[in-house]
Image 1 (cartoon, rainbow, N blue to C red):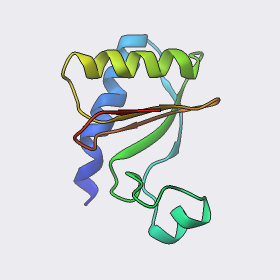
Image 2: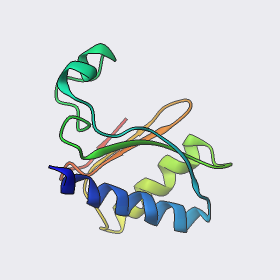
Image 3: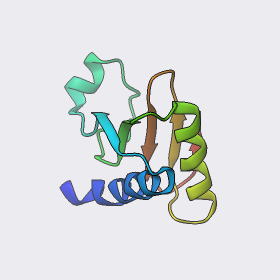
Image 4: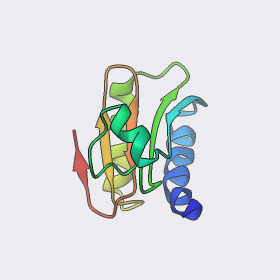
Length: 100
């Protein structure tokens, strides 16, 4: 199960390189089902599958981070979800594209 996060971390690394900005914080990675319920996560959360990261990059807005993630995805580097929130960006490698 722990190897499931590797593709997502490679995407995060590519994003960091593309933006020339280091990761400042990874807010959420794996969530147990009970913790996911406690934080009101989706019932089919990719965090419970260990395929998702909620991330912030130093000095880069979530708008820019999500735009970069979608650009990397559009070039075929991964298939997954990109969600933009007010203070972080969600990236996962679920195998099909989703945006929010």
